[in-house]
Image 1 (cartoon, one colour):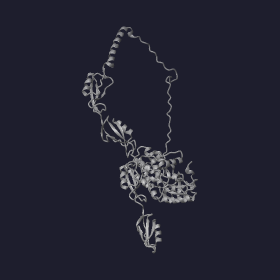
Image 2 (cartoon, helix red, strand yellow; image 1 turned 90 degrees about the vertical axis):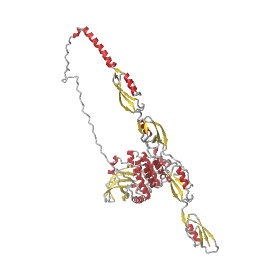
Image 3 (tube, helix red, strand yellow; image 1 turned 90 degrees about the horizontal axis):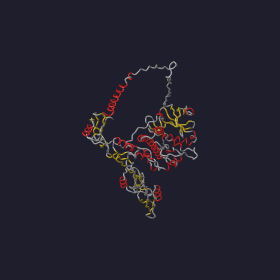
Length: 630
């Protein structure tokens, strides 16, 4: 059934301004239509909340609040929200119309993207999410369907704010709505029903995994089983599903998809900065993949009709054209043989001819041929002499390279199957094995490199396995001798094959000084980035923790964040000298400190003479302030 013809909104003019022209898509919370803004004369997309979700006043109010928040988000990688309104009590959003396809269409059409293409797309996606997080918005439903790609290579993230708006709906038996799509949902959204910026980061990590491998990390028979896998299983590195993925890209995915939100980037901005750094270091620059042609344009297929060739009738040539009997050739009269009268003479002549024919036949069949001796491996003079003894002579052609024959010896001998006496035999001397300049095989599979070396007649002596920070397991890192070396055919080289990046266990450096901890981590091969944090339990200058934490085993050379204590946060002590002791105690306690009154002169005026530590000094909350009064 044609949705455009049956949909009551098509053909409507919303709020006297937006002319709905066609149905575009139907989602779980809203339907999207192509419309024209008659006031500004521009194409727009109108998203109308489903009727059953618009019955709740709280939902509508929340929808409007979030629509205003989303409209305030201005970023080139975000589908812009222009307006919001109501149509028969159904709220709708007016958004930028983005012609093209979504990432789901592209992945189904292309399969997995190259690492360069995947990082290029995610550069735009994370930039959009980062801008949203900075504005206080959480997407909650990051998935391929919500990432739009145009034919000219623009990437737009859609549906900001809508999922957040509907999360307050009461149209479910549980009293809450589980937002997001199961394949991309962060564990805390399933287990606790909470979502923040790190939940979007998790979903973005799953999306990057899918772009790199062509499939989502987990599959299950039911939604609940799929959500349980996200909650209880770590998402594997993409390189375990697809080749050619660098360890640094693996690390981005595993960091973003940590089941513990505390172990993820704080928001999309932090993940985006790391992705850009990895992309630059690895040189993974590629164009945004083009949408499928079938989505962006409709092609009319021609109807080709096959025509059978005409039947050909073969005439019956056994019958005459007129239908009568076939003609018969007249018989000739036999003539009398003249030699029958002279049989003896004829018999003698025939005998002589037969004898001569036998001699001639032997000569043409065998008598004039000789056997060519094998002269391969002989010197020039030896070959010439041996052929001469067999009634043949040598014809020397240009020398050739030979893998099996030493330089200066005969490497090639060519002659007819039957060699006649006195004919020539083609000979070529050997130049010895050919030399090749060894090319680079870095990044190729072991089998491909072995095949290429075999084509050059170079043997693979053995294979050694080495760690590589840039090449996935199973890919060639290099050779011994190295690139550019001159290698003769028949010799052997050593292939160095990657066994993946080296993973190193992070030691526990908590309580150590920043200098000692940095030195220890650097000795393990890590890059160290220190950050400062207040702590009421760890002394100033000592390490509180690391990220990733102690016991984790990231790739050698990766960055470890060192969280160093600044000591406790300090606050100014109120200056209460001269106040009554009662007022002074209240002021000290209200500021977050403990008051210890000490009467120095009995029978006085209950006024504070001195406070220790003194007023206006900076002290941690909870510090005891001694108040001397008289």
